[in-house]
Length: 130
Image 1 (cartoon, helix red, strand yellow):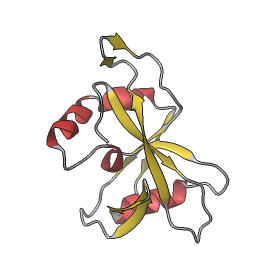
Image 2: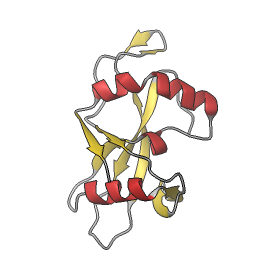
Image 3: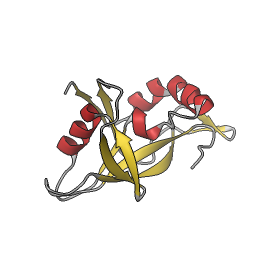
Image 4: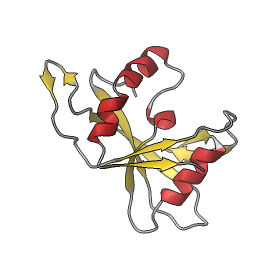
Protein backbone atom coordinates (compact mmCIF):
# COMPACT_ATOMS: atom_id res chain seq x y z
CA UNK A 1 0.00 0.00 0.00
CA UNK A 2 1.80 3.11 -1.25
CA UNK A 3 2.14 6.14 0.99
CA UNK A 4 0.83 9.60 0.16
CA UNK A 5 3.11 12.59 0.66
CA UNK A 6 3.58 13.28 4.37
CA UNK A 7 2.33 9.86 5.48
CA UNK A 8 3.94 6.96 7.24
CA UNK A 9 2.70 3.57 8.34
CA UNK A 10 2.13 2.49 11.92
CA UNK A 11 2.07 -1.10 13.05
CA UNK A 12 -0.88 -2.30 15.11
CA UNK A 13 0.50 -5.17 17.19
CA UNK A 14 -2.42 -7.43 17.98
CA UNK A 15 -2.80 -8.85 21.49
CA UNK A 16 -1.86 -12.44 22.11
CA UNK A 17 -0.79 -15.00 24.66
CA UNK A 18 2.85 -16.05 24.91
CA UNK A 19 2.11 -19.18 22.89
CA UNK A 20 0.41 -17.24 20.05
CA UNK A 21 2.26 -16.14 16.92
CA UNK A 22 3.06 -12.44 16.52
CA UNK A 23 0.31 -10.82 14.42
CA UNK A 24 0.07 -7.21 13.26
CA UNK A 25 -1.45 -4.97 10.62
CA UNK A 26 -0.31 -1.73 9.04
CA UNK A 27 -2.26 1.52 8.87
CA UNK A 28 -1.42 4.85 7.24
CA UNK A 29 -0.99 7.97 9.37
CA UNK A 30 -0.13 11.59 8.57
CA UNK A 31 3.23 12.63 10.01
CA UNK A 32 2.78 15.65 12.31
CA UNK A 33 4.81 18.66 11.16
CA UNK A 34 5.11 17.39 7.59
CA UNK A 35 3.10 19.01 4.80
CA UNK A 36 0.45 16.82 3.19
CA UNK A 37 -1.42 18.09 0.15
CA UNK A 38 -0.70 21.74 0.97
CA UNK A 39 -1.53 21.53 4.68
CA UNK A 40 0.57 20.65 7.68
CA UNK A 41 -0.58 18.12 10.23
CA UNK A 42 0.10 19.19 13.84
CA UNK A 43 -0.98 16.20 15.90
CA UNK A 44 -0.66 12.47 15.33
CA UNK A 45 -3.87 10.71 14.38
CA UNK A 46 -3.23 8.20 17.17
CA UNK A 47 -0.80 7.66 20.00
CA UNK A 48 2.05 5.42 18.97
CA UNK A 49 5.33 4.16 20.37
CA UNK A 50 8.45 4.53 18.26
CA UNK A 51 10.68 1.49 18.58
CA UNK A 52 14.40 2.10 18.27
CA UNK A 53 16.41 -1.09 18.23
CA UNK A 54 19.66 -2.66 17.10
CA UNK A 55 18.98 -4.54 13.88
CA UNK A 56 21.63 -7.10 14.80
CA UNK A 57 22.18 -9.70 12.12
CA UNK A 58 20.46 -8.69 8.86
CA UNK A 59 19.32 -12.28 8.36
CA UNK A 60 15.56 -12.49 8.75
CA UNK A 61 15.10 -15.77 10.57
CA UNK A 62 11.69 -15.26 12.17
CA UNK A 63 8.29 -14.89 10.54
CA UNK A 64 5.40 -12.83 11.86
CA UNK A 65 2.00 -12.29 10.27
CA UNK A 66 1.45 -8.77 8.94
CA UNK A 67 -1.75 -7.87 7.08
CA UNK A 68 -2.55 -11.60 7.02
CA UNK A 69 0.68 -12.39 5.14
CA UNK A 70 3.96 -13.91 6.35
CA UNK A 71 6.61 -11.25 6.96
CA UNK A 72 10.23 -12.13 7.78
CA UNK A 73 11.98 -10.15 10.53
CA UNK A 74 15.32 -10.27 12.29
CA UNK A 75 15.73 -12.12 15.56
CA UNK A 76 16.16 -8.91 17.57
CA UNK A 77 13.00 -7.34 16.12
CA UNK A 78 11.04 -10.54 16.69
CA UNK A 79 12.05 -10.58 20.36
CA UNK A 80 11.14 -6.89 20.76
CA UNK A 81 7.67 -7.40 19.26
CA UNK A 82 7.15 -10.56 21.30
CA UNK A 83 8.11 -8.73 24.50
CA UNK A 84 6.07 -5.58 23.73
CA UNK A 85 2.91 -7.46 22.78
CA UNK A 86 0.17 -7.31 25.39
CA UNK A 87 -2.26 -10.08 26.16
CA UNK A 88 -5.33 -7.84 26.41
CA UNK A 89 -5.01 -4.94 23.97
CA UNK A 90 -3.32 -3.91 20.76
CA UNK A 91 -0.26 -1.67 20.69
CA UNK A 92 0.39 1.00 18.07
CA UNK A 93 4.08 1.13 17.11
CA UNK A 94 6.33 2.68 14.51
CA UNK A 95 9.07 0.24 13.53
CA UNK A 96 11.28 1.28 10.63
CA UNK A 97 11.94 -2.23 9.27
CA UNK A 98 8.20 -2.90 8.92
CA UNK A 99 6.60 0.54 8.51
CA UNK A 100 9.00 1.55 5.73
CA UNK A 101 9.07 -0.55 2.57
CA UNK A 102 12.79 -1.34 2.62
CA UNK A 103 12.69 -2.56 -1.00
CA UNK A 104 11.32 0.76 -2.28
CA UNK A 105 14.37 3.07 -2.34
CA UNK A 106 12.47 6.33 -3.03
CA UNK A 107 10.04 5.57 -0.18
CA UNK A 108 12.85 4.56 2.13
CA UNK A 109 14.76 7.78 1.41
CA UNK A 110 11.63 9.90 1.95
CA UNK A 111 10.78 8.17 5.23
CA UNK A 112 14.34 8.50 6.54
CA UNK A 113 14.05 12.28 5.98
CA UNK A 114 10.97 12.28 8.23
CA UNK A 115 12.32 10.08 11.03
CA UNK A 116 12.95 13.02 13.39
CA UNK A 117 9.32 14.17 12.99
CA UNK A 118 8.09 10.60 13.49
CA UNK A 119 10.09 10.14 16.69
CA UNK A 120 9.01 13.57 17.97
CA UNK A 121 5.34 12.74 17.29
CA UNK A 122 5.47 9.47 19.20
CA UNK A 123 3.98 9.30 22.68
CA UNK A 124 7.19 7.61 23.78
CA UNK A 125 10.28 5.93 22.39
CA UNK A 126 11.37 2.48 23.48
CA UNK A 127 15.01 1.58 22.93
CA UNK A 128 15.41 -2.19 22.56
CA UNK A 129 18.97 -3.42 22.90
CA UNK A 130 18.15 -7.10 22.76
